[in-house]
Image 1 (cartoon, rainbow, N blue to C red):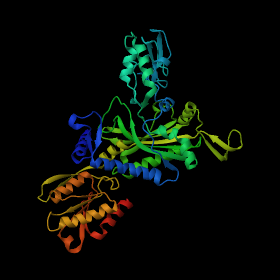
Image 2 (image 1 turned 135 degrees about the vertical axis):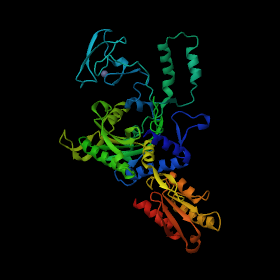
Image 3 (image 1 turned 45 degrees about the vertical axis):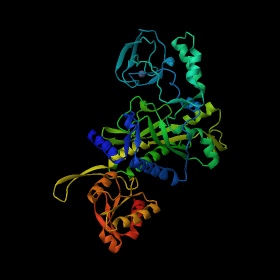
Image 4 (image 1 turned 180 degrees about the vertical axis):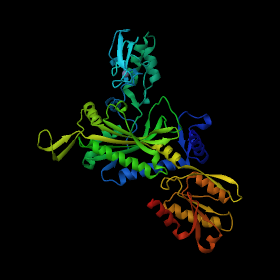
Length: 502
Ligand SMILES: [Zn+2]
């Protein structure tokens, strides 16, 4: 099955969906460029999401926030913790914690703890390791080395000459390593900015601005698409895990107590959305996070998973984030991020008018992962025979026509007898109508059909000699290869109607 991934990777390169970044220089590890077809597919998936989540709904509005945000945003959200403090992983319960906050114990003292964490059945014995602390969660001494966990990419804003400043600060001084780190931090920190590791925080930070300018009433959502960056230690599986990726996130603000209902609603909505464009909807499913997988801010989380060639893996997370983020930003920014309902009765005071911090349901989808999932879902090999009776395999991308980079290819049967001129005329009409079309007259008609099958082109319109006589063309369906004759005047309508009704 890993074979299928290789086939899709090779088709992506051959047809111009995805290229290795900086390929002529030997490539940059885990960075990819979306080629002429890939960028269209990506934009189409993003547009369908926006249409479904924002345009067609009255209760969700959009946002397009800056990638750089004030560094205090990341301090409040918890992303900066561990950036300059060493973190340790517990090999027993998988907890990641700050070494300086862990319970300090005498080296060599005996320990007992449960295998796998607090729900473990088997009791294990050990001793306090040489670092002098144990896991704060399960009490084990089986720990990883301390390391800086730099998930966020750090850079600086403003014309600061760090090399000069650093050189000046240490010139002629005899600092210890610890002192050096402190001096460097003092120089770097004031102008430090981080490339956002998720798009979500901007929706929390701008909650009041959005709510007040739109007068949205709870429940309502703020949606955003955009790039996020994580300095992943392991990047793998083509575009599945990359340091630079694109997200489609929505924060849905609800009244405390109604989060379970809304969580279930969004889980079902999102799963159905993914299935709508799939050839094999059974390859999309949900999986609930175990208690020890849950992020500290979440009271419940499901992953929407796709059955990749290497097994079920994440496509989207649908998390119930409680009021954690809004409360943290209220605290750090010393601004009340809350909502006032003038009609509702305050459950505590019994009076009319209820001010509360909303709870949040967050469907957070990976756009680039979605693109990979749909490429894998649509990749098809069909065995058949050609006109000479030889066995051959037809490779095609059965992309949903609304996702297909090219909706219609206009193909004159030959390059003579005025067929190209008529083809160009039809092409002009398609472009004027806003349908993504491609005019193509090179190679034999059979080769052109194969090429467009691999590109996922939904329909091929062929201009032949009969077209000159009766103003008709043939329209070929990619999935069935069946052809029918339609009038040239109707061609745009026919294609448009098929796209709308799907
Ligand atoms: Zn532990």
